[in-house]
Length: 534
Image (cartoon, rainbow, N blue to C red; front, side, top):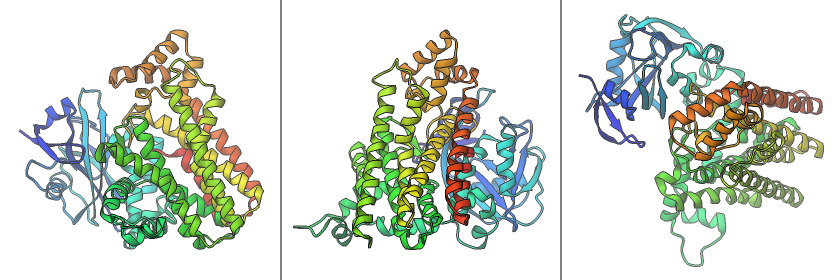
């Protein structure tokens, strides 16, 4: 009888369970997913045997399984790689995430998945009882395939794919800068400045804080700062959150806008931490306000460190980046304009959040208009992106018109990002990071919901509104609400609105900026937001 290791959301062992029973009850347990690449950067995929207990006949990564009770994770990965694919190689854990997916046969995958990678140049010899077929694919080819034929691929591959790309680009060595990073133009754009940005953020906010750091931030102490407390209650929770990943596209956007108007990104690299830290502060606070459980596949910060520390850390990330402008070698007029941009966008962000909260709590019967929804998104989701673009254009010496148009373009990118987020949250094959159906649970008035409430027959719209007002975690009710939304083609309608907005905003930028690599990178951002899969 095969057993799996049950774990909590911090991957601490809490027991063992028979494998099929764990999947019947949807108990969280430990697993691993192996991704093997060859020297050309191609990924080895397998098609699962149709007789597998779930996901039979679908294409998956190289190998997936569970470590046995008492078995080291990598030892289990080596064992299973030999059993399934008939070879072994050096393996290394890259990252981990949590996912939950229900299947038509009544089983539930609720996995704490450890992603393991390795390199192998030979020919696999798979076990036909486990594997029907195999092939090598570039990451660019696989990305295109997943978008065009998602039903041919297993759930866990789809939800981990973007994170895999990000982590591979972080790896040191020739392959990390070569075959992996060539997955697609959009992937290259997303991480072009990533290493510089990461170093900049860690230099500004180190993982271990000192007396000297505190004095630089707020001045000399009258008595003495407690650097250990600052580290434990500020830096440690922030880096617990930041180290979970994130595309860092907002600081990339800032640097690209700087370059697009003729500036030198290297000269303002140290300021790129501003939008990323503020953005993460908004996420920490948003999770508290929404009573969320997961963020980026792990427990929300306040569930780990407590509400008091999480609130304080999130609020600190709104204010701390202002010291970068304070200490920058900029003309006084530029400093004043930068301060005004940041403060205005922070206020708009809070206006947007206030509107969103009141819609799904205080005014439970209210149906916003599409225009009101778009303005809410412009304030809530578009504010930090708009800040990043305008700040980059300002620091690059752009004209007032360039600053305004790039800010509007970034605002649109933020709105499109939010619309895609709404779609992904009700897509069983793509939801990641937050729990599937969280927007239904929270009663959110998304563009999908607004379209449905306005277009559906009265019986359906009243039922959807009733479920939203429940703030329910019942999976059957959430599924019922999603079914009502899908009946009205609300996803297709939302995608159409997003596409039209992205196209118009890019036309405005295209007419204003001279041709450059940075301009093309901005164009890629528009497509990246529109076509993102996680």
